[in-house]
Image (spheres, rainbow, N blue to C red):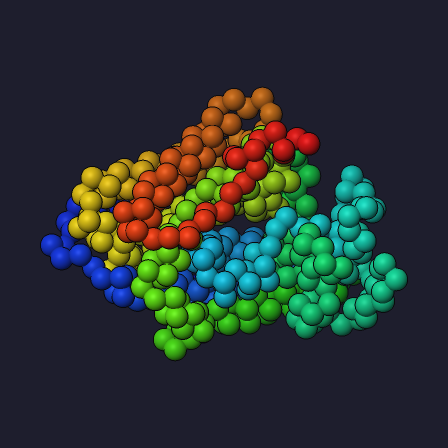
Length: 415
C-alpha cells in the first residue's frame, strides 16, 4: 500500500521566518497547491480502499474485512485534512455532501437492529433498506433498485425525499457497510458486522450479493467524486479559477473563513459541543468505526496546514509569514493558540488510543473524559478569537464564521 506523507509542521519548526513577508498571491498559490495535494492523496487512499474492498468480496474473511476497515481509516486521514477548504470555497461546499454527509439514517441502506425502529415522521426512507428491496415504494414513489449502481445511489437515493439524513454515498455509507451499527451506546465497542455478510456461500444478514454490489458501487462513486475535486484544484481547474476571481483580499478572506468556520461552528460546535451536551453517541462523526478522534484531530491538522503553508513535501508562502511581518506579537499568539489546540487534540487522541473511544469520552458521568473533550473545544474557541484578530489586522471585510447553537445559544439545543 502506498505510503503518503501527510502532516504538519511541528511547533519546533516554526522558529525561522523570512525577513520579507510572503505576498498574498504567493500565499494563495501555496493554499491551492496544498488543496490539490490533499485531494490527490484522498483519491489515492480511496483507490487503496477499493483494492481492499475487492479483496474482501473475492475472499470474505475476518482478515480481509479487517484490511478493508484499516484501508477506510487510512483513507480518512488526508480527506479530513481537506475540510478547511470547504468553508469559503463554494465549489467545495456544494460538492462536500456527496462524500462526507453525516449523520445518516442507516436503515435506508441495510438491515438494522430492532431498537432503530421502523419509521420516522421526518423521513419516509428511514428504514427503506435498499439492499433488501430491489423495488422501493416510499412516499408514493417507486424506485427501481434492481441493480445497485453509482448512478442509482447518486441520482436517486442520496438525500432522497430532500432529507439530508438519507446519506447513500460517501465515506460514512462505506463505513456503515464495513462496520455495521455501533449498538454499544457510550460503552466500549464499535460496530461488529461479520465478514459473512459479504459471503454469498455462507450469508448472514441476508442479501449478501446485493450488499457486495452496494459496497462496490459506493466505493467506485467515492473515487469518481474525489477525481472531480482533485482536478478542480489542479492548475487551470475550476476551484483555482474561482479563488483567483476573488482577488488577493478575497482569497485571503477565503482562507481565514475556512480556518475560523471549521474551528468554531463546525468542529467546536456541531461536531463536538453538541454531542458533549447531549452525551449522545449518535452525534459522533465516525460513529460506526469509533474513528472520531482521528477525524477531529485531522481537522485540526488541516487548519495548521493552510496557516503555515505546509503539507507533505509542500512548504511555501504562508499566512504565518505574512502575519509575522505585520505584527510579531499576533504571530506569536497564533503560534501559541494553534499549538495549544494541537496539544489538546493530541491528548484526546492519546486517550482514544489507550482504549477509551470518543463516544465513551462524551458519555454521561465520565467526568474525566468529558473534561478532555471540553478542553479541546475550549482551545478551538480560543484559537478562533485569534483568527478573528488576524482578519482585523489584514483589514479584511465581510467575513462571517460559521456559528453553532451549542456555543452561541445553548438553551436552544434542548428546546
